[in-house]
Length: 118
Image (cartoon, rainbow, N blue to C red; front, top):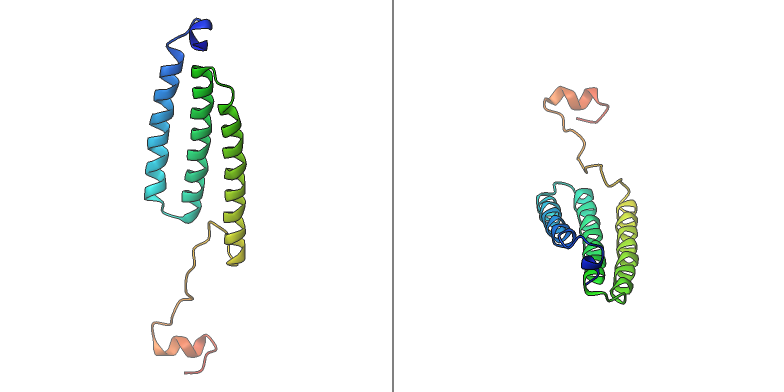
């Protein structure tokens, strides 16, 4: 194992544990939301964590072919993020803006003051 060659066999298990903790925290943000932009960022963060885990697996098992899978996952993640951006732009609003209806008048005189017909 390459971790033993470096003289720090405790580093890889610690790194795997920290990746798992960070994945759990990001998954909580994905579930809680509250906006779509938060969920998109959480999905991006989860894919970056997955890329890191794949790279750690490539180091711990000494199989550099796993790095190809990490690169492919990074490219697919970029395309997915771009698709979400295009989806938000097509709706005519930014990712952070909420869709709200215009305020309705509360009194009968308010509609006339706003320039509407009563």
